[in-house]
Image (cartoon, rainbow, N blue to C red; front, side):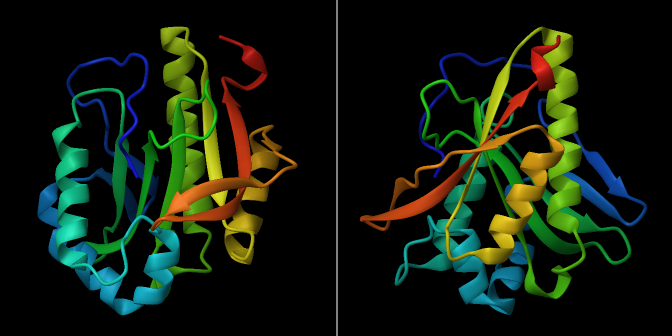
Length: 207
């Protein structure tokens, strides 16, 4: 999913920082070493994971695909192009989910596509929305500091009712908009319609 480069990006230390969600949850930058945790979460509910990670090709080696994804993300961790975190439970260091800002974009002037996946055993706790709010706040603060503007895309399959509800709440809270027309996204050599949500940062264009 993360192939298209942005027009320009920055380099530097700690480009993707560790962020605190709440007293028992932390957003930790993705590294290749989390592959066993990621596989465990995938195997808990493969169908749900496939919906959240549609770039996985059915019938192909899942471990290899996830390993390649982690390699790509860590390999670009020092440039302002991809920002991916895993959600860690600080009670037992377990893998709660994955959230990130990627560069697989639908609109010409967008900066990032935001995607998230919370494993089945941690769903219905508002974790996806909480993590999204923390990341968008971090990105907005950076945009103001660097005097930049970012457009964030959130794409959701129209049959994913919980995902649509979460995206709509995020849009409302962040003064975003929902594109009226469905957009077609290529997944496993098929064009699948998705609902597109857009958030512009900083809100109100203020810098």
